[in-house]
Structures are given as C-alpha cells and as structure tokens.
Length: 559
Ligand code: HEM
Image 1 (tube, helix red, strand yellow):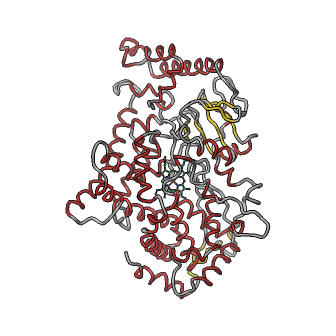
Image 2 (cartoon, rainbow, N blue to C red):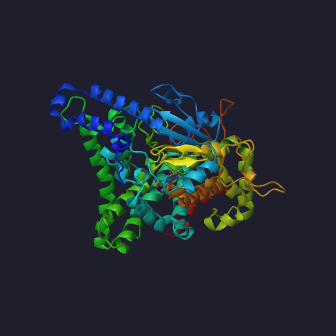
Image 3 (cartoon, rainbow, N blue to C red):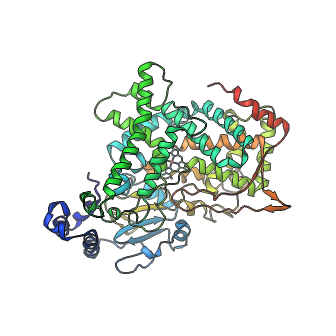
C-alpha cells in the first residue's frame, strides 16, 4: 500500500503524466526556466481539473456542508481558531468540506464517529500525510503520524503489552503515587508555577516508564532535546510555512535551487529527531550490557522480542512515540488548511492539559471541590494521602475525573483520520483520501446528552433515581477505532491520582488582590491540543496537618 502524497494524482493518469513531466529532476531544461511559483501554479491547476473530472463519476452525493466557492472550496469557511465551535454550528451531524480539492468530513455526533471510525476502522485508520514534518524530517516514524499498516500494528502491540490493560497499569501505581507526592511538595514551595510542576511530573513518569530514566529537577538534557525536536516539528507543520506541504512533489527539488532552503532545514531537524530516538534508546542498551538496568518499556521488549528484521527499529520508535510522539497528535496533520486546526504542536502534553483544566475547574466551581474534599475526608481521613486502593470507594472523585475529561476536552477535534477507499454511508459518498475529523468537543457538549454542558458538574455521573446516566466521556475523548489513544489507561490513572491527592491537602480558590476577587475566565487555547489559558488561582494547604503530610509523605513510597 503506497502512502505518498502524490498517490492521489493517479486518479487521473493524464494529469499524472503532466505532473511527472513538469517535475523538476526529470527535466533539467525546464527546471532552469521554472521557478517555485511556476511549479506551484501548475500543480494548483492540476488539482482543480482533477476535482472537476472526479465529479462526473460520482456514485452518490457528498454529505451536506457549507456551500464553498469555486477553486478554494470551503477554505474561507474555516475560522482562524477554535474550529470545533464553528463546526458544531453547521447543520447536520456529518458535514462535508472541500479544501482546495481535499475532501474533509466532520463528524459532529458520537453515533457517526463510532459507525465510521470504530465499526469501519479497517478503512478509516490512516493518517493524513505531512510532507515536511512527517516525511522529510521523519516524524512519520512515530506512531501518531504512522500510516495504517504493519508497522503501526507492531508499535501498538508493543504499547498495548506495556500499558494496554488494567493489570499493566496497576504495576505503575507506586511510581504515580510517588511522583504525585513530589508534585504536591513542589506546589507547596512555588504554587504559582503549578503548570510547570504538572508538566515536570508527567515527563518524569513517562521517561521512567519508557527508558528507566530519572529526570533531573532542572534543565534535563533529554527533556530539552525532545522539546527542541518537538518545537522543530511545530515549525515544520505551521500552516503556510512550507510550500512543499501544499505541492508535495517540491520535495524532490534539489537543495541548490533558489528557494529550496527547506531541504537543508529538513536535514538539520531530522538529525535532532534521530538523536531524540537514539540517545535514550542507546542508554538503555548500555545499562543492559552493564546489568545496571531497571525494568522499562525498551529493556522489557529487547529482552522478550525476537530481534529480527525491523524489530529493533520498531522498539526504538514506538518508545520515542510514547514520549515525544504523543506530542505529535497535537500537531499539524493537514497540509491544505490555512487554519490553526492542525497547526500547533502544543508543548504541553495531554495529561498535563487535563490536570491544568482540573485546577481551573476547582477555582471556578468551589461547590464541586468542597463535595470532593468531604468524600476524601470521610473515606481516607487526614492522616494519609489517598491512593489507588481508595479509588473504588471514592465515587464522587471518579465522577469528577469523568467531568474533567468532558468539560475541557484535551483534543477537541481528536486527531484526523484518513480514509483509504471510497465509502458510501447513509446514502452519501465519502471519497477515498478524505480527512475525517471527530468533533469530540461537540459530542461532549451536546446539551441533550450532558445538561448545561458549560457547568462543571461531576454529579451528573452519579446514579440518580429515574435519570439515565450520560455516557462516560472517556468513551469519546481518547478517539476512536484502531487509532484510539494507547495511553488512555495511564492518562486516566494520572488524572485520578493527581485530583485525589491534590484535593486531600490543598484548597484551590480565586485570588484576591487589593480586596478584589480575580475571576478567571474559562477560556481554552485553540489548536489540536487545547488547554486553559494561563489563569491565576491560590493554592494553599488545607491545614497545618495537611502541610506536614505533604512534607513527610514522599518518604513513605516504596519504589
Ligand atoms: C488526557 C490525556 C489524553 C487524551 C485526552 C488523549 C487523547 C488522544 C486522542 C484523541 C488521540 C487520537 C485518537 C484517534 O486518532 O482517534 C490520541 C492518540 C495518541 N495518544 Fe493520547 N491522549 C492522552 C494521553 C496520552 C498519553 C499519556 C500517552 C502516552 C503514554 C498518549 C499517547 C498517544 C499516542 C502515541 C497516540 C497516537 C495513536 C495512533 O496514532 O495510533 N496519549 N490521544
């Protein structure tokens, strides 16, 4: 199965020939007379003619959608930010858009998302191709950008073996509790840096699990390397940054051609990315050779898998996918849109974003916080911190975790899928190559399913007489089908323990400055990963006893 960006041109053989014959490396004479703008115009022409030709052979109508303009289609219908809000306004649960000839389907209900992305996942599980960030820099070796196929299945098998079931996740409870206890201590010292502390804790947990690597408290070289590579990916996928994403054949333009500096940039960024995958992987191998290694994702796989063929490569890149790769599902996946829809690699990780949303919710909805603390006090008491063992006895905290995932969905539009072949669904044609987006925000903010969806109200998930309980948001917020988030159980565990331990010892309230209460706004950033915009809150120990517990508890965890 080919996954090159130019494969769609095969829909019209004559135009493919035209494209190939105008293609720089095959025709040096033309090359000298063409510049990048000429080449781009030729490809734009090809795209338009191809769209017109395709219309003649169409077996069923496209799903309804906003009427587009000639040539640009619906490009101008895309809002500059918070696309999920605009998508939710459009009539119909399944919406068709044409972006310069690229079909895009928006699924505004769980019914359609499940029917297509889950039930027909054998054809809906590819990813859009990103030329600069994915193919040229090489991020398509990471899971989130991997095309559907054998390698993807192997990555996912490795990750499932490590964190796919409750049994595996239970093994990491001690580490989660210990790191969260350290997190409480950091907050006690510098509550104003809560966001940094959440990020540091998430990084420390994941790097320990994947590579057995202990993160340094400040300026850890590995964390910095990954951050640089992810930033470079962010630049590589910023909308309009690289023409090669719109006209993929430009990737074959020789680097000496004026305007082809992107070739050198891609090479430089590729080196950083390779270091990101190689350095921690080789560290594990060295430790294994010296017998100083503790069990982790990489060493367990190197020990148990038969290392033949591409196995070692796949272990290395699936490991890189868990830490750095998971940032990628925050990234630009569609080259055609000028919106910020897929355009941000949020440097904040998903779990980080969910926990930051929890702090915002607690600041804005004190009644929910009070009820959660009452439950912890009565079940756990004040002499120790809550643990995973308490989870079955904390139904309100369980409901609060669900509400965190629902109220501010971390990935409001999920991560785009790509359809591998033409499909007819409910009488509509969904053409091969369509980019399919689930509007997770809309699904979780449907007032008919979740009453007053803007309110943070955990009790909606508690059993109530006669009322049917709304669906668990975790069925939707982690995506769908064969691309569903492989980190969902770990994320759920991290959010639970962070909420429970934080509420046991801290009060989170609005800040009062010069006698005025500062009202934080419930505003989220745009981009594929959405998180609360920075806000002020006061985080103080609930009592002197709570303070003493924070300072002493770290020592009580056995690792
Ligand atoms: C609040 C926490 C999280 C949320 C809401 C979340 C959500 C998502 C979503 C919506 C997707 C796209 C699924 C799809 O394409 O349908 C995804 C993919 C992914 N997530 Fe997560 N995630 C979270 C945490 C994590 C964690 C902790 C890890 C790693 C340990 C992780 C690793 C990944 C990876 C590697 C993919 C790509 C899967 C693929 O393309 O096959 N995520 N996540």
